[in-house]
Length: 407
Image (cartoon, rainbow, N blue to C red; front, side, top):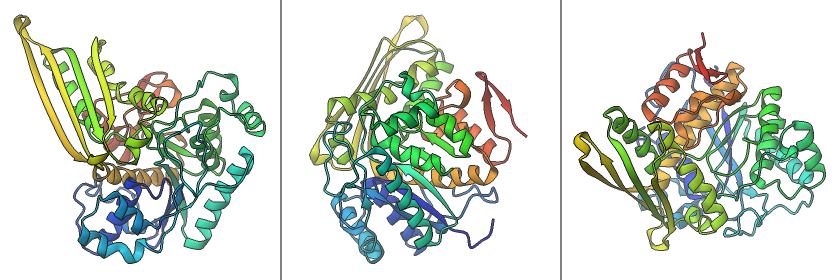
């Protein structure tokens, strides 16, 4: 890889807290104002990943604020950090976004595309990506979805099962095709890597999974694993390995950012809770009867999320015990580095000629997608081992639900 190559990162939700934190963070890194603390793959040198300094950002949003104003509104950066990057961020404005309030009721902006048909919306997205490549002079592009959570749809319907059926549904302006699917389709149609950092249905549509294989588009998703679920997938394997039976696990979250506001809609919240609750039973090997996951929008908290867990376990001689965990975290400070690493790893997959779901990137997600119906691995330590194996050129890919080591 040439040292002067540049990677364009096109983000759906560029004006959001996570995206503005990622853009500002890399600008601060370029200026020597911060180090690589918090970036999981900073030490993974000589493995083919593009340099952090080579990333160039653009993308879409429903809100027109420049990124400096957006970052100020989200209040994640310190005042001195914001002051240092404001000259750069103030020159960056999102492109108008695709919008459909039937999929996300609580986030309504003023900068949506005026196109009417789904085909026109897809073409507008592709035109934005082509302009981004040309104006920024980037060599390759990765698309990452950071938009607010959409409601779910039934993917077993015939229109979602093959590329041909999905194309027909697009032409018919089918109301079950949401914005996240349109961004995924636009990227996949051009063979561009795509990551879904949200619980929304995007590239996990069966038709789009097939199309990605045909077009050479690497995929990763879904729903970024940042705080509470990350710790759950660390603790649960330890409880399993020590034969401590989990009687109940109560998880609650309060947050006040735009993501929390979107999740105040019951349909969006239900989709999020599905991805947050999927890992535990899989790791333990049995169903936890009282596994409760709650998310509450609490405006005063802003981006400073609080995740609280109460875990009831039974040990030797039937003796009950409890674990209590209170994680006070900045949601975007945990998420932004993962977005950066996803861009770098998906770009590496594209240069390697890989297509479809990249199973080794499952460590970044609450509900990892798998290729060919492979079994999902949720345990954090095993996921990390698979990622590092893949980075070093070995890789782990499932075949008919079993693993084989490539290379």
